Length: 203
Image 1: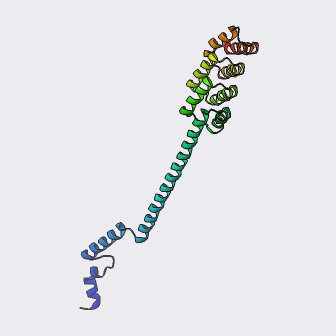
Image 2: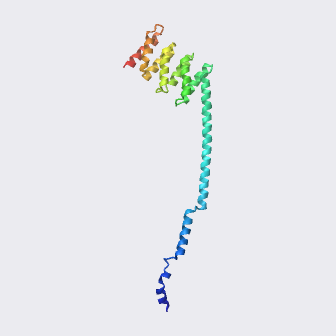
Image 3: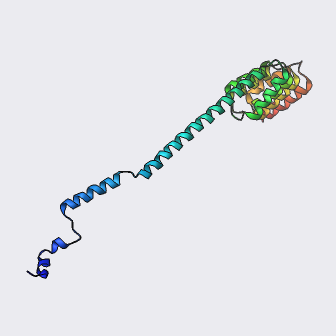
């Protein structure tokens, strides 16, 4: 048999597009292994990413704890100063609250309300009214201001409270305003201010 006839009779064996069944299986196994086994470089990269993320988490936790501790210490000091025997210290504490607290803090507000109702210093009370008015929607603050208006006898504080009722448009203040107007012991300047506030609330 000549070469030409041999090639024609065994053509399929010379077809380079086909593999033996065993070769085909070997190729599939190797391909599967290469696809599912991460490369060493990728593993190292993921390891570093994981370490970096852990470090960031630790640092963030440390900073959060330090910030929390500082704020807590600052609050404790402020609460202490609000009830200090020194008028100047109490006044400074009220100003500090006004300057640095933009969000309501129930514990501090409760102390400020106590200051408003029972502090003996006029300047401290007036500053406290301003501090509380930072949160006009707080119902507890509004009721406390009305209560203070009913009980207050110092003219300057009375006028400050009357102003606050006008600013808040607090209709529940009408009764204590009427009592101030009718009270013979009320200073004329306070009566006039209460009268104007009453007319303003009725509009």
